[in-house]
Amino acid sequence: MNMEEEIMFLKERQAFWKGVVAGVIASAAFFSGLVALIYYMVQIVQAIK
Image (cartoon, rainbow, N blue to C red):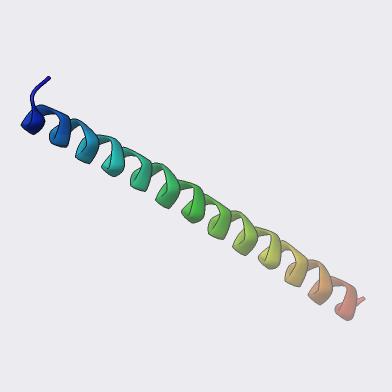
């Protein structure tokens, strides 16, 4: 592999890992939001009772 190919490969790998990290953070934020929503729903239902 020459230098240009190596740089391209590194950039591709960096982009891939950035995508993976972004996906993990997004799904973590989504799940925490979902859990918070369910928690608040339960609190409201208990308050009404």
